[in-house]
Length: 170
Image (spheres, rainbow, N blue to C red):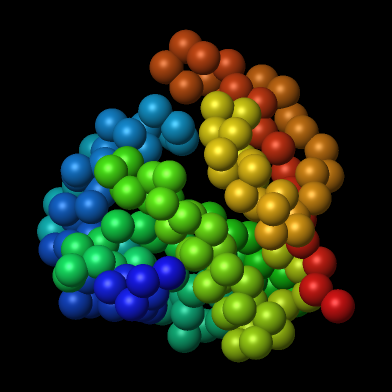
């Protein structure tokens, strides 16, 4: 990964860039996952969202990150629900940056944080069947499919299945 990218902990300095990232990619994200509430898309709501992420990190319940390129956010990544040596990961990449290895890079960074900083023994992930690229990236990094739930989500009339994955650390 080029040194033009910075993987950073989500912080209050990211309020405006994060709102811009979410607004610019809103329709792209909503084509793949359930939509955020409309009330999310304001400076105050994003500031609250970031503060909640910071509080979760202080409490040891989660970690949130952004991948920045030229002062713009191009991806997000997080570990949430941290409890008893486990956590759940998630990430999203700006549409104009897909296919460049950024999701893989974010996942690699999350794996490092999970193992070296948090001492987690197990990471879990969920992927909808409309996102085979994400499923491939997770499997490439050693995540195994545990099962799937059909009829998990109705996304604008499309009934989707979700895959449950996990990766254990030795």
